[in-house]
Length: 216
Image (tube, rainbow, N blue to C red; front, side, top):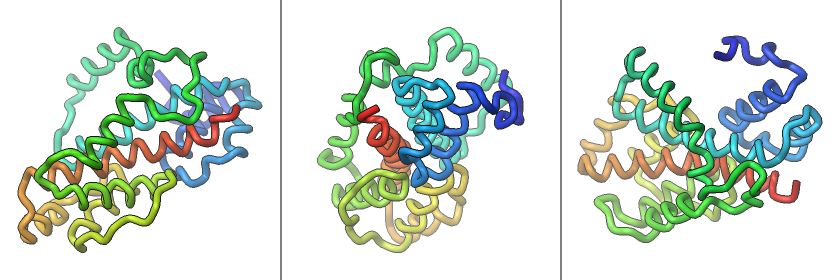
């Protein structure tokens, strides 16, 4: 169990350096650059480990937004069961990374499962129009640190939702959903919007990290 004051728990070691990097990637992805990577490497963290840790940031950035947006509260007992499962199964980052181990580098490329999901978002059928999904993904990913072209225009009620999800994993309120419902969006379309924005928040952060780590 990590100390609640994790910043001072291991200030000069690899754990502290890794957590500092991940905190910046989660909260301020635009600050992830060569300087941030150099600080972690100088503390003894290897680039492959930062890639694997960044996969976990992507996973939890997505998951936290989905859970919070739909009010899926987790009880302490459920949290204990989840923690036990993760302890038995490992981080899962190797599977998310397409079976790679920390010494098998991603070298700037998204893992196949994530790249495949992006293709589905951008081209697949759904209740939310594909043009809206593409614009949401581009808007949120860019805010999350990724490089994207200009996002298409979105209705104001959609902008309010996705901009909140881009920057705040716990910011979706009933008013966001009510505004979408009042504007005529179906429950299925709203679910897809939340999913796309949440996924883009995770993938954007991962892309930012992988791009800086690619040549390390």
